[in-house]
Length: 389
Image (cartoon, rainbow, N blue to C red; front, side, top):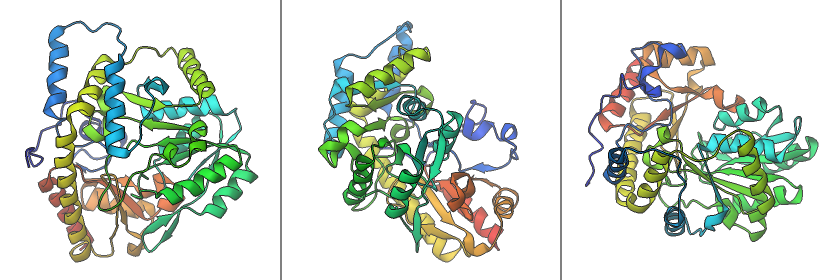
């Protein structure tokens, strides 16, 4: 590999959420963190270089992107995902969750139903509840470690709860599904039939394994383009979360105009200049780095597979098709959620994401982040193995 992902960088005392806020979040400070979706790898050199150049320039006034920024986005999505978005349909925000919350306010009224498929990224539920909407849950079906949508339940819940919007996680965090075109078509047809707008979070689109292929929701049927927003960002792909930049694609002119008006009401206007230059550089020059990273993550995933088979007694790997977040099935341990947290924190000395925070269907599971140097991951798995006895 051209890039060294084995190198360990000391991230403590850098105001890192992942490493420096255990005490503030009620955790012991001696835990090895495997929780938040934040990689322990430096961004591509090309990204760091443009950030240095901008810092050297020394003027950080109000900034907007020009055509070359959107051209970089268009080229990335076209060549990586077969999607050619129209540049003028993008709206830049500070993050995908921010865009989701804004879309909830634009598309629905207080009390309206918003549906999600749990277990799923926990800020989805919080975004619905915090905005005074009715949270509607359609649980995914888990069959021998393979998660699927319960389409009958999904449609029934939409009808019964007067649902106005659906937050789709594509690829799905935390269960690692990369939804097929047929699955997306079935979801889309239900939403089209019942007038449900789809908010598609596709932030993990660049992390897909094996023969799985990420499908941008709006490309499945032309009719979907006017009933969806595609929420994208370079932040997961290139580890740029702290730069707060996201690109939300809304082809529906009316919805996009309302989205911009809602941003105006919140006082949000020009985006972060460092986020803009980093995003453009990443999409223009980060392809080789990403290729090396995905190969490294595949090897990390193989390490988890081997441990799950040989050393992690009664803990099973839910085989991921995408993302760098691994879903561990710990139900055979027969522990309560509190007891399972005790196992990870007090015995294994690991900070993981407890499965129940992703919804009721996550009880008995845990999510770990494998985007770290292999030696760190191996140490973590050995800690868990010893704790299991």
